[in-house]
Each structure stands twice: as C-alpha cells, then as structure tokens.
Amino acid sequence: MSQDFDFQIGSWRVTHRRLRERLVGSTDWETFTGTITMRPVLGGSGNIEDNVLHISTGTYRAIAIRSFDPALKTWVIWWLDHRNPHALDVPVIGRFVDGVGTFTAVDTSGDRPVHVRFLWLQTDTSTPRWEQAMSLDGGETWETNWTMDFERASADG
Image (cartoon, rainbow, N blue to C red):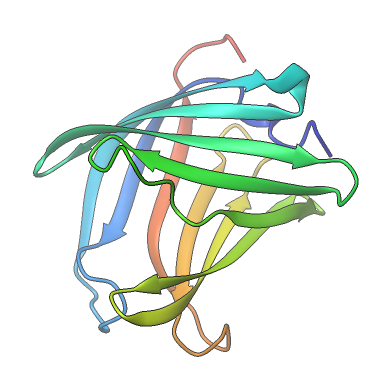
C-alpha cells in the first residue's frame, strides 16, 4: 500500500535502454546511464524520485512525483522534466499486485491517442526494473520503449 515504493528508497545507479523512435516499429535502442535518489514525502504517503539522465545529447534532470490514495488504494505518478519545466506529464495511475506495479494512462503521441503503461518488476530483489510501454490500439498490443535496471549505489535505503 503506502509502503509499496519503500524498496526504492535511497540512491541507485541506473542503466537506461530506450527506443530511439517510438511507435514506428523501430528496433534501434539507445543505452545510457543515470542516477536516482528517492525519498519519502507527505508523511510516507508519497515520494519523490530525483533523476539524472546521461543521454547522448547531454545530461538532464527530472523528477517523478508519486502520491498514494488510501481510499482507492492506488498510486498516481507524475513526471517533470527540467527541459520542459512548465509541464507535468499526464499521470499514470495504478497499484502493486503480487509484487508487480502496473500504472496506466491515456495520453497523446504527436496527434495520436496512446495508452501508456509503466511496470515495476523484481521489486523484491536487489535489482528492480522499470519498463514503459505504449499502445496505439487501446492496449491490445504494447511496444516497450524504455527500460531502467537499478543497482543500489549506497546502503542508505
């Protein structure tokens, strides 16, 4: 519940892998590194994930803001990127079931409606994994376009 993301508290080294182009059938992946520090906020019913991403075009920063709704037993996750500081991404909403977090939203990619899905996997291990996928057919098929593999950077979590 509100402790679902406790596995991520602390500092991490991250290996990112993302498609260079989304939703066009691309198989050209880019791999880069980054770091994340996550800390609880809102008395433990939320958290902030501070990201540093070292992509080929330069380093940038972003945050994930997460808030737990105890009435609905769901999490809401927003993304804020310093390259576009006036816009929060459409939030994904979901929950953890049997150790897997599934979070979804309906957004747009260009002018097309797109379903977005975040998965949190292996959260009971020392190497959690996050995946982002998108669907142009209402969730019938998914294209995974970004993965993040985590390795603990320090023993503070």
